[in-house]
Structure formats: structure tokens, C-alpha cells
Length: 282
Length: 124
Image (cartoon, rainbow over all chains, first blue to last red; front, side, top):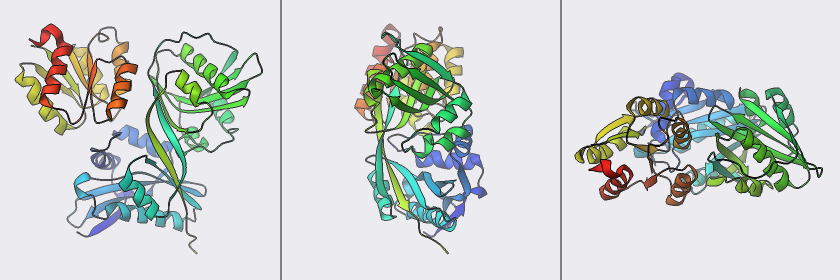
């Protein structure tokens, strides 16, 4: 079979959505999308469709796709997948080569991606293409339920602008989906700032949709992170008792993890973030 | 006879479930996304909902929160059919207050038993 790699700009968002969903049907965590969600994804995460691509066989059958996010000097590979029946045809590697070449031509210094832990075929492909592990992250979930513990301290709810300003002060690394640029692209960012009587202070920035919170970023400026984190979450859920929460990419050694667990967050799965230093193309 | 709503985006997964459910004399309704699922649940008031966790517009967990927040739907039993590992499925069902789960691939007997238990007297 001869493979062709075609820029994603030659396909409609509907076609890309259909193809993406076909590549994920047998995934442990399939995460299907509809057209609206993929369009939001492209907007929020600065996906460049000219650098994104589709693999097609010589008989015209589409085999898989990959998407390339581009920001300043960095690239991000996402949504990479090949339709189950057509795997082991070299399509995944060819899609990767196309996107990495685009990143090189754009003089982007590094390319990031995340892979679900234990997806060995994908992990091996990424290692072969020069990616190395950087961090491991947890994807957590919390179902809505009533809060019974007492609240402490005073809370200030942050509007979108205040939340984005606050996020700029975050001192640690954030993965692409929760990075400042992603949050600045999203319309639904909010936050909260907490002051405890013992001097502890901290903040939480998140996206708030009708039925759920997502993309949580928490930081303790002073005091015990578990105490500050727990009170931030208690305030959040006493204010919004019926909301579901999907907290992606919480660092495995995040000092607030015990606070999340105390508020009944549970682990869905883990991701490994990987990075590659790109080639310099003259 | 009971009315059962299956919320699942992959049509191939529908075939087996449809065969099992209709052979037991029940009526099976199908919604291929969360929004349609909520709409069909509201308009049809099913006796049982079979729910996939991976849906294209909102995942099954959040849809279960929508369903439970509607006073006319909050008491309808919900069974999760998922490809997730059993431990995650069990934790999800416990946390979201759902009524049972089956991890794919599941057998005909397992589905029939779980559906009969959830339906109680309506399974006859």
C-alpha cells in the first residue's frame, strides 16, 4: 500500500471529526468528539491545520490523522490516531514525520505530546521519533455530592480577566491544555483566591461549564498546600454543589493531591508528557 | 415489557444489545449522543438507561449528572456499559450513584441478569 500524507486543510471539520472518531473506537479511553467540540479544541489549543495532516492510501481510503498545535517556539502533537484495521501500515510514523518536519521548518525549538500510560505501541513510536519522558500526570474525576466539612478563611471569586492574570503567576510547568495560552483562548475561565486565618494563601483557576469544571490549576502561595487546597475546593463545591469535575494533567507529585483526594477525587488514568528537541533547519 | 434507552455513539455496539433486549420482549430506544439521550429520556421516560461513558458531545459521567438533576428522570436506573477497566468502572458507578456496570466485552447472560435486576418486576 502506498501512503500519501495530506494537509488537514483539505478536509472539512466534519470529515476530520469522523476520521478522528474512527481512529479511537477501540481505545480504552476513546474520548469521541462532535464537530463543535473539535472546532473548540482547534481554537483553544492553537491547532494549526496547515501543519496537521491526514494519511490516505492510494485507493483513496483515509487511514488516520494527526494535529499540530503551534505557539511561539513550541509545537504540540495531538489527536494522533490510525483506524484499527489499517494499523501497522506505517501511517502513524508517516503522520509523525510530516508534523515534525513542519515543526522543524517553522524553527520551533521543541515539540511536546502526551500519551496515555500503557499505550505501548504509541509510546514506542514516540521514543523512536526522538521523544523523551518529561513528567507523569493524573487525570482525576469527581462526582457532585454535598460538602459536610466546615469552611475556613475568606474567598474572593475571580472573573475571567482576574483568573487569567492570576494564572500568569503560576511558577511551575503546565501541560499544553492548561497552559496560559489555552486558558486565554477559552471563554469560560474563572477562579478563586483564598486567605486562611493562619496566614495560608492560594488560588485556583479553572474552566466552568454548565454541568462541570475542568482544567484546574491550583497554587499555594503561603502555608500548607493540603490545607489551602482543601479549603479552595470546599469553597468551590459549597458554592457549586451539583457540578461534575474533570481534572486533567495534575502532576503526579502535585502537593495538592491529598486535598483533591480528601474531596473524593479519584484517578481515571495517567498520561506521560514527552518532549523532543527539534532540528534546526536552515 | 419495559422501555430501555441505550445511549451509545457506536452503531456497531448497538446490534448485540438490541438483539438481546428485544428478544426479552423489551423495547429498545437508541440515542447516539448525550444531548439526544437527555431529550429522549425526557420525552420517553424509559424504565432503564444503558449508558456508554465515551460520548461525542459530553461524556457519560456528566450526562448522568444531567439525568440525575432532572426531577422526572432522577429515579430511572442507569447501567454503565464501558470498555474501561473494571476498577475504574466500579469507582465511577459508586461515585456517581449509578446502578451497575458491565465492562466490554460482556456476555449475553451478564447483560440479561443486570437488566433484569435493574428492572425488577418490569423485567417479566
